[in-house]
Image 1: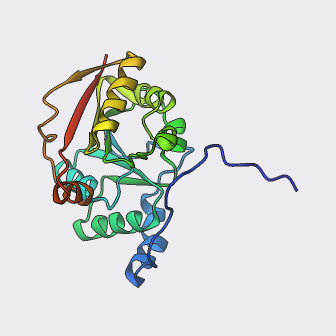
Image 2 (image 1 turned 135 degrees about the vertical axis):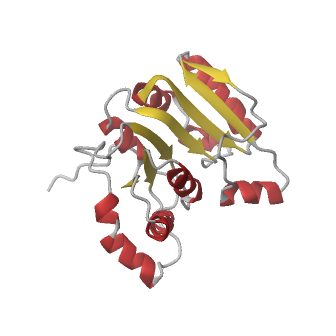
Amino acid sequence: MTITPPKFQFYGRRKGKPLRRTHVGLMDGLLPKVAVDLALPLDGAHDRRWLEIGFGGGEHLAHQAALNPDVTILGAEPYLNGVAKLLAEIEARDLKNVRVHYGDARLLLEALPEQCFERVYLLYPDPWPKARQNKRRFVNPENLAQIHRVLNPSGQFWFASDIEDYVLWTREHVAAHAGFIEEGDPSQPFENWTRTRYEAKAVREGRGQNYLRFRKA
């Protein structure tokens, strides 16, 4: 039997502690209703769409979905426990405008048509701080090309991190792509911002925050 290897090599955790019974129920019952079908990834009811890559525990995504009911927000996350937490938020807030890709965001990006998003978020991604690990960072030429492709004309790519080296890395890679223009004050949080648990940890540990706004040129 021939086994086809995965298209992308994946790094990082897939799951943490065992799920609570309620979260197991949400994975079984709610996830199929809100899951993105890669054969038809844009089945939301709204023409306006945003994407959050690696939504962690879903705090920011759920917050934005509640504030913007006229926007369909897609979230991609490979971490089981994070997906379960977002599902709990969807149920608790009765959010009708959220779609979830439980898996590698790169597969979702590949399946999406061109110019389908107003905004793409990448918030506090894994920094992979060691030099030999830098190649694992989500910001790379291939992923930036996909993000650029799926953004509307003048769409926005918003990146946040507390790791100065990753901020520099991102600016360098975006400049090399040459398809974006940086705008705004990187010291100021994004509009309608809510602090994620990753940002809260950075604040506790004394690291500064950077909010980079790139507009598609």
